[in-house]
Structures are given as C-alpha cells and as structure tokens.
Image (cartoon, rainbow, N blue to C red; front, side, top):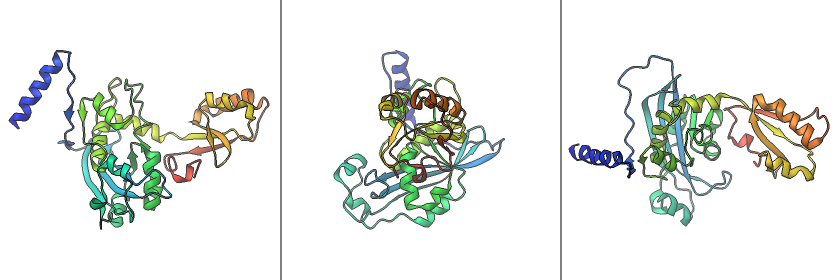
Length: 298
C-alpha cells in the first residue's frame, strides 16, 4: 500500500500547481460500514457487449451486471452480487467488434451465459440501469424476457450531466471529469465505473447522481405524434426536435407529461393551423421506456 500512497502524494502535488490534471484508476466500491437508516431497494446495473446494434439480428456476447442496495435518498449502500459471462454467438464476431471490445472468437468459443442465473439476479430488482438504456434494454429483453417486466433508467440521458458542467456524456468522458479512468468496453468494468459515478455527488448541485436519475426515471413522459402534418412544415418540426418514424411515417416528440398542453397548442397554431381534437399522445413510464415495445422503428 505504501507505493500507492506515495504516488497519490505525487499526484496531489502535481494537481496543486494548477498546471496538471492527473487521472487515477477507479477504485472498487466500498460498502457502507453503517446500516441503512432509510428504506432500501434493489438496483441492477447492466452492460452488454454485442455483435452489432440490431436487437433483432445481433447477439449478446458478454453480459455484465452489478446488483446493489440503495436507499430512498439515492445513496448506494452495498454491492450484493456481480455477474460477468461470455456467450458464443454461433458465428464469427465482426472484426470491428473485436477491435472495440477485445473479445475474440477464441474467448467466446463454447461459452454460454447462464439464463437461470440472469433471471434470478434480475427478478427482485426495482430498477435496471444502463448507460445507454435504449440499446441495452432492447438487447437484453430480446434474449431474457424478465428484463421486459422491469423499470429501466438511462444514466446517460436521464442525469443532467450538461447542467452539472460536463461536455461529454460518454462514460469515459464523465469519469475523466471526476479525475478517474477505467478499462473500458468490457461489460463488468463499465458496470463498476457506472456504479462509482452514480454513488458520487454531482459536480455543481452536489446531489447524488443516482437520486437525480431515479427522480427523472419515475416521471412519465408523453410521445406526441404529429399525424398528418403538412410536408411543408417538416423543418419547423425538426427545429422543435421532432423525429421521423419511418415505420409509422410520422413525426413525433417525447416530452414531459406536464408539457402536453403546450405542445398541443404549438401543433394547432404552427403546424395544423386549426384546432386538433384527436391528437395521438402515448403515455410512457419506466416500465416501457427504452423497450422494444416503445421503439418507434420496431
């Protein structure tokens, strides 16, 4: 331990000059020494490595999960269980995936993820968290239906990182802003890194990142469909952050539930230029958000 302390002292000395920033390797999460003084729940951090990005065609080749106990305040108390397993996809791993993850055909040969172990670990989770939940959820629930029954949260897009002074939202960028680094692109390493971020206070507000994430995830959102909108108004819709669904041939936007009346007024005034009483708006909660069920292109 002494060399570590010596190097830490050197790093501290460099940083105090103001001329250097030093990145330290992320350290394992340390369980709380004190018992919780609030209601606790079970959370699950998930990360997948896959053969591609299409949940209907590509396969999971590595699954990492960390099961942890957290309080109503968002404080993480302890790690309960971890899982990291490889899966032979039954076909060659694309070279670009091997370059990205370091996972080769030899690594996965004959390997299989234990489906029963996955189900048991997921079963009592109150929330499943991924840093790109729209990707990981669809990959996971396609393979393991138990994931489809869970509330999901996205630590990339449901924590106000930019408001807290961060420019990049990727896991590695956020870690660097906290002065740490990790071995990226392997599932369990990304899970451990994300747990450290969620357990820490945010830079500006000092709120726990997990608390902010859960608060956002609990709020229902509404997907508003601008059905039958004039083609001439597409740039107006794009300028307001509407997206195009090729499957439904329609523009849509996801908004906070309390903004529905404002959005309805905008569409009537700027797009349809008349009163619209049959506007389609789908209410979405954490149970369905990021799922294949609510994918506008699925």
